Image (cartoon, rainbow, N blue to C red):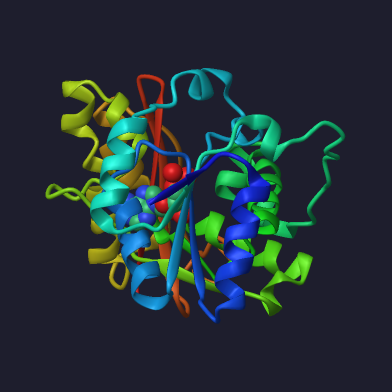
Length: 280
Ligand code: AMP
């Protein structure tokens, strides 16, 4: 695995791959890698000739400075895991490679996605995500971009970014199902920050979503959401939202209709966890 720190070197390497008729898959991450990230790498390896993973803890997408300050970093282990998974290149840029002097902040027109759920509860977050991903895509210019369904709204935002920038004509988007721990907890880098008591109750997010999935055809959605919130609050979580939404738009639903998704965001201590489950 080649490790790149300079954007220009990586761009040059991938241009050479392209010249040789080889397809590139790209997996952007913030590190503290787990099996969820590695599934994205595996899918890319299966569908492309060359797989690039990036690790960059992007300061501009953190709306909470404490979350940024405590974001886990496990670089040595990350490199070992990427090697074992057969990743071809790792991009490990310093901040100035991503935001060089003179970098101009844009505004991305994300529409309703920015005022719903994560957009509402993390102001500015998706602008920062678009900023870093547009820059990374300009550097890597992959044929395929791989994202995790765990961050469903982020997948939608980035699909919109591809349209807004015309990159949807150059690359495909691959969305990989959420990888979970044996007890159902969605794998997440932030899980590393949970203490034993918090870790023990963290699977409740998934249980609350399973409760909705098991009853949405027979119980009013408002009641189900309230039950799910109560499950979490009784265990001491601060709940940002439990929502049942239309899967294509994430617009909240009053009654079952079409393709649906249940989503949750809740905090224990100062660690905020999210999860979602497609209902049909
Ligand atoms: P992050 O490092 O948290 O920014 O995540 C990098 C990519 O990995 C994003 O596309 C995430 O959606 C994806 N990802 C994170 N956790 C999981 C998981 N448990 N299952 C599948 N994909 C995931």
